[in-house]
Length: 245
Image (tube, rainbow, N blue to C red; front, top):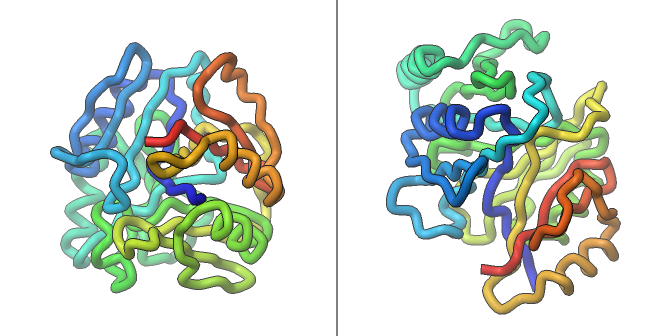
């Protein structure tokens, strides 16, 4: 039994507009599976595939703009590419974000609904990830998060220190999932969360039971009667377990 990270879910005031921003930002396509939902994934992509972690944007009646625990880091291949990408993202509607970063080589931006993300300087570790270098989750205890998430998913643990942990698909493709020690954490429910999926033929209920045994707890986000299961890890980071596919 195993799970894989298949998408990052953004709650939005306007799923279509925010989804189109991210599609344009990443050079991907945008489509809709129904009212209030925009799917962002590479053109011609056969979902799910570890080569990419997609984005699902869902309209909710709470369009507040705040910085939550999870964000995306975007990869670049050169200093010129980083400069060009930042310029293009600002033309698409991103705005500079001051998170107290000081003099750093990366650029902090916010998307049109206020979600923080970063455009990284070229780093060799991200040379083959695609446009998304990493999905980053701020946390209090990266080693503990690494233990939980490396058991929750079939992703490989590449690095773990007291301040940082990094996992990647066992296939060695796509972006990383990273946990970063952060002194002050937001306590509100997140507008950005992770969606996990069992492999075809694996049982969703069995996977949920396994996660609960690892320390996950049930999360009530007002989801009602839905086919997915909402859980939270030991630090309260919400995530969903979808049906197998």
